Length: 110
Image 1 (cartoon, rainbow, N blue to C red):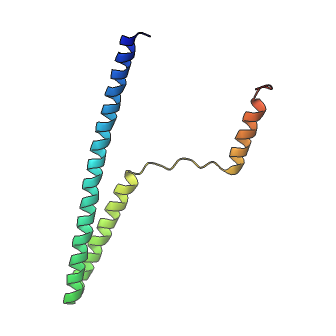
Image 2: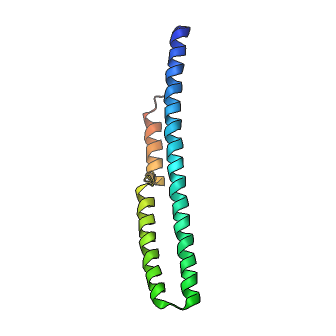
Image 3: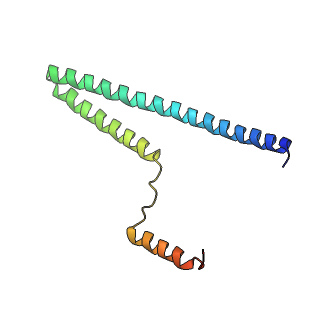
């Protein structure tokens, strides 16, 4: 491989890395906006709840409970939708069987 080919390969790799970095930065920014929105909503509802408790307004309390439940469901749905699935757990029996199979398949003298 010539120096020119190495340089071209490195430049192509740099472009891919920079593209991935840009995508990651956008994803982080979007996540921060969503988190800030959730915090703001929770703080607002907490303030409204405190005011309703202080004023003794039970109908306002019921409305706030409904708002909290709606917000909790929306947040739960969003978190679930944006959480990657957990990797499949390997049981100790499977790991032992896999290791034994790999050892048995290994040629002697290796």
